[in-house]
Image (cartoon, rainbow, N blue to C red; front, side, top):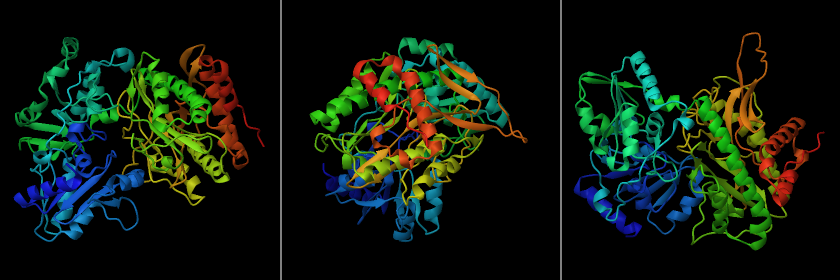
Length: 615
């Protein structure tokens, strides 16, 4: 069924139910960023496969909104379809709710699937439309009836995330949640976030591609903990583990029934995550206490076990990525391999570890102009071949038992133009500006974002994405609440110790090249050093001098040990302080990686990490 036929059938369904506009986001009942195939309604309808986007369909219009990461990709995906691209964030482009308000007549009806939209989002949209006399309908699913070959709900088995990786048993985490419930006067707490639930109850799954999550809901009371999950996914071992931790299992589809049966009391829930349909099943005598999910905030700050595991996972993946860069430069490019072929080597390098589970997201392998698309994906129909000139970009990550990684490197494959070297060096300067910054405990992500972005601004450039994102722990590669963004609505969370973040500025020149340099970092007190000593990961503390008012300063400690491309750097554009930081970083790369390298690969690592002259 092509896009035009899908639209025709959707519009017929809209007419049948008296609907003037249909609003279709990228969503599942769990407010996930990456969603199982069963819920990819917007992608199925529009043909745009990016991870973020919103479609609006009326009797005469078919529009697709997506952000700057996907403008180039979406333009290609939508070519030849009835959908028009709305470049979200560009000057003069309204948001979807603004477009609906300004283009629909008074008395119109807009449909959105209430099982997939957070209650807060539905409320905001409802208020905006009501000012124009437009009604929001949230109890209609207009797509299911026309999606004939819709994939079924996923059914992968779950597995334990053991105490050697979590540091705290599930019963201990649930106990801490109950303490917070009691403090806030809540009798119950409802969780829909797959990452929150998996972390809280120490299990992982495979329902969401690359993210080791499984579809589930959780309800915590003063004396019980319920996990709503397809019980076919739970083997006897996991059943016994849950039972030993005081966790009772119910069917995935039984959560509404459980909510309807709640006695009078107070339910802690986050309307920005819980769907409208789910909250509307809560009895009137149960008051909703609007709270950010306790596990969402708790898991952002790693405990010592998690931190040491993440450090180990970072070293392991840095070894694989550095060996991959050697392969790209010395074997793949001379042979003229294509963007798809080369990633088999990266998979092979990662699979050498028993702790490896799966990629943390589909690898972005992009040569030349293709890298200008931030989330480019090579396909059998469209791919580039590596040549011995210009840039190749790889953005990749791994899910392992001891953590999650996300690393991007842009590497030279031969001669570079002056512009390419300048853009690479500018990206490196932007990265160093933030990575080298001491900052006050509690500084928000918007303030930190501006440090890296200001380097680009001085050159009249900007990148249409955040500077960095949080990373889950054997979980989503993008997890909050921490973010580095110039959007104050999303960057208000204050940084503190043991929070993991990426730093990934870039330069993207359409039809020329894309450059991104990304490391994973953890925020530590300024007097702490996390490193390998005598083959053992240790946290070293040195004496700390606080200023006269006792301010606490943090710093970013790298979890990524992959060299930056020596041949792409113009050292004369670096300040003395930037060169010192780069040399110190490369010294740490040598320290952590050299024991795992030999022969030509060792020579490559030594050359790439050779110190640059100072002054």
